[in-house]
Image (tube, rainbow, N blue to C red; front, side, top):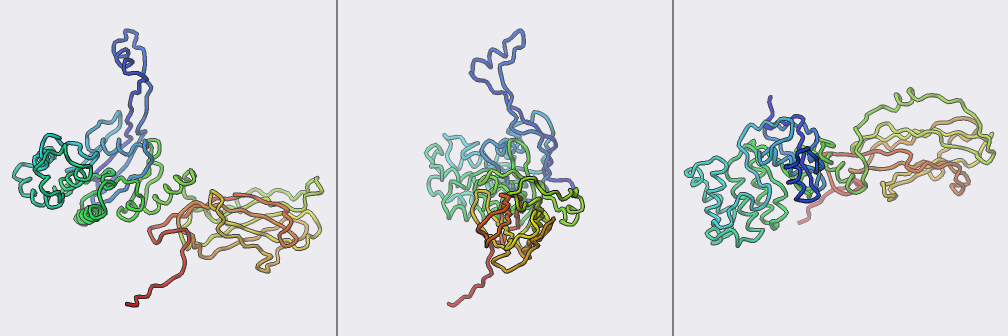
Length: 406
C-alpha cells in the first residue's frame, strides 16, 4: 500500500550570505564569483507515512523540523528529491500564518478555508463548529491584529481541525494555549486520528509525543537520526538531550556468539610485580534492552598470584553523568569467585531489569580485603540503552498496587 506521504532523498539547501549586499554582488558578478555558503537544512531525508499514522517529529531547534513540514505542505520546494502527498492538508505551522491582520476572525475563517480548497458553502456548513471551538466570544467579529497569541492559537486550531483534513500538521501550536484549550485540542485530534486522519505533530513536550503518537522521527542536523515506536524514540531523544549520548543501532548480539567470536589471547603474567590481578574483558548480552529484559554482564579477569585471599568482584550501574543506581559485590552477597592463578570468567545476571528508559553505564572492579583495596577497575566499561513503549515514568519500575478506598 502506498503511503499518504512519501519522501525520497529530499535535500533542502539555503544560501547564506554574511551581508545583504553580497547577494546582489553574486547576482551581478560577471566572473560568477560565489559569495554565499551553503547550509543543508535537510540532507537526504526519506520517509513514508501511512494513512492514519500519528507521527511525532522530535529535534532541537535548527534540526530541520519546520523545514520538513513546510516542504510537505508545499510552502517550500526541495532542492532535490521528491515529495508525494495524497490528500488534503490542514497545517498550523506558525500562529497567525495565512491570516490577514486587517480581517475579522470570521473573515479569516473564510480566507483560510478558501486557501485549503473549500467552497464558501462548505465553510458555511462548518462555521458554527469553528466558532464554537475557538470560543473567543465577540472577538470573532474583530480584526485579528488585536488578538492575543492565545486567541490566534484558538482560531488557527479551530479552523485547521474542523475542516476534516486527510492530513493535519501541528507545529508547536499547543504550547500557547491554556490547559483547558490543550485538552480540547488533544481530544479533537484523538477523534480525527480515530477517523483515519494522518497527523504530523511537532512538540518540545516529549510526553505529548509519547502519549499521543504511535510513531516518531528524531531529526538531527538535517538527517533522520532514528525512527520507530514513539515511546522508544522519545527515550532515545531525551537521553541525547540530557547526556549528549550518540544513538547506536540496536545490536541484539547474543552473549554466546560474542564470546565465540572474541580472539583468545594467551595468559601472560605482567612484568610489573605490583599488578596482582586485572580485568581483561567485559561483555553484555546486548546493547538495547526493554524494561524487564534479562541483563547479563560477563566479566573476564586474570589473577597473577597463586592465590588472592578475599578476592571480590563488583558490578555497578550508573547514569552517564555518574548518578549511582546500583552496585552489589560478591563479598556482600557471600559469593565465592575464582581467586587462583589464571584467567577466569564470572557472569552477573539481573533476571528482570527494572530500569525504565535511558542510557546507563556499567562499572566493573575487582578488590580484596572486603573491598578496601582496589586491584583493577574499569569505569564505564560498557554502555546500554533501555527504550520502551509507554509503561510508566521515572527511573525505576517498582512493584505496586492501587486501592480505591472511597
